[in-house]
Structure formats: C-alpha cells, structure tokens
Length: 292
Image 1 (cartoon, helix red, strand yellow):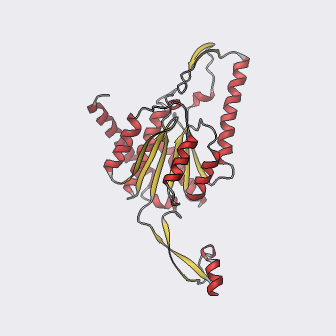
Image 2: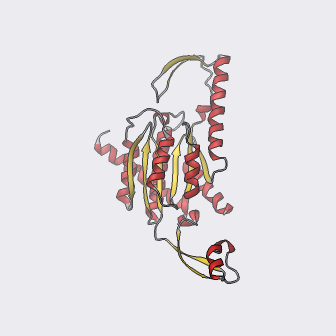
Image 3: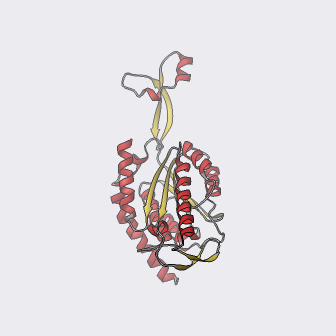
C-alpha cells in the first residue's frame, strides 16, 4: 500500500476509534477495572464501617489491634494487548475480515487507555512472537500500535497462543495489569497459562468469530485452502462424513474455549465480524459494572 494511502487509512481508523471512546467508556474507564488502579499505602486502625476484607489478620495478630490496609490510587494503569495476527484471521464472509475487526479493536482499546493517561503496549503473535510493542503513552504511540497491527505480515505459520501468553507472563511480572487477549482462539494447550494470568492480572478474552465458520455452504464440491498451513484439499460439503467431521471440529473448538475458562477469573467477550464491535464492548462493560 502506498505510504499516502496507508496514512489515510490509519487516520481513518484512528478517527473512528476516537469517536467510539466516548460510547465505550463514557469517561469512567477506571471504574471498569476498579481494584487494579490502587496500590497499598499503609495500615490504620479499623473503624466501624470499614470493609472487613481489607483487614490484615497477620499484622493485627502481632499488634493485637485490628488493622486495615489503606490504598492509594495509582496514577496510571498498564494495558497490554495480546494480539493474534495469524492467517486464520484472513477470513470474512460479510462486511469485513476478522483481521480488520482485530485492527479496529486494538485502535479503540489503545485510545481508551491513552485518553485515560494510562500506558498501553502489547505483542503480536502467530506461530511465534512476531513483534513486541513496549508500554507507552500519547497519541503517537496509539498510532504506532494501529500501524503495526494493520501492516505487519506474520513470518510464522500456525497460532502459538500459549507461547504468547507465557511471554506476556514474563513481561508483566508485577500483578495488576489489564490484559486483553484478542484472538479467534483456534489454538491448543493455552488453558493453564491463561488461568495463571487471570490470578495476577485483570484478563479479558476477546474471541473474534465469523458466522460462516460455523455453517457449511450448500455448494457441493469445494476447493479449500488452510490459510495457516497452506494445505489444499477438495471436499464435498454435501457428504455425510464431511458434515460429521465439521460438526466435531466446531464442537471441539467450543469445548476447548469453555475449558480454558473453567475455574478461571477471566472475563470474556465474543465478537462476530457481522456485528458492531463497539456496541458489543459497551454491553460487556455495562454488564461488568452491574456485576461488580
């Protein structure tokens, strides 16, 4: 893409994202992630009305006085976007590709963080770690994130989500970050590390989907190409055996997704390419506030 066209496209994506920030967060970004925007300051004596969950029982036992932890709000949060750029996202049956949906979501979340004065960074992954983007602030940094996700071409095949989460775990040693995992979750063996991250950080899994991934077209003989492996095959979509295989594949995909969340302190959002991703996130965050 010529540089002028690329700049116009990035600015267009940024403009849409900036307009959507108000709809998504309504200026109350931190309220969606309360609990991670504070840090321990000191102990003080318990007074009636204090939250008993803040009592430090070990210290209270030593001093023989009920002491509660006092917290001060941190000046900034760290927002980390674990972004899947594997070739399985080069698919779309309606208005846009899954990869385009990913770019829009990264742009929106980056601008939400920047507008709130928080740091945002992340990594891009496919069959390996493709690019690390350090935490940063400001509009130029948000534009860089949009450009990287929009233009970066993966050099590796497959989807190594587990490796991406393990690298994230090493990079974010201190707990309390906000991690968005943006992927279609067509991957294997990532459940344990995802749950570990959920114990230390505020993790939101954004599952990108397309309705045609779950439906077989009544087209008879079709030529298929796996975008991640390059494998090419002919199939008969009217074949009973193929239909059974396809149903089993979808069932396994959903089962693995559900298993990865079982017992984990992780929030989830499923976003289809056919829907308004902003409204999907608005619904999620409103529900989150009600639950908290």
